[in-house]
Image (cartoon, one colour):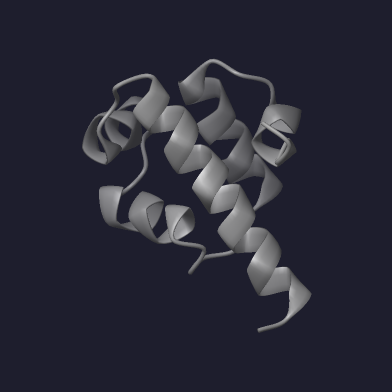
Amino acid sequence: MNNGEDECRKVGGRIRAMREGQDLSQEKLAKMIGMDPTYLSRVEQGKRNPTVKLLAKIAHGLGVELKELFDFSL
């Protein structure tokens, strides 16, 4: 696995943790931000490399700043 795939997995895991921490289903978050739930699932699994624009939409839906998606120390 290369470093890019590892980073996608870390970001995806962070998104999942934040979503679950807010008791949001993938379907509900996806609907809130106008995203396909299947695509969101693949982002969370690290199987997709989302654009910054898409990550910003996810962050907005979670009510956090974009940079928080990259804070792996939490």
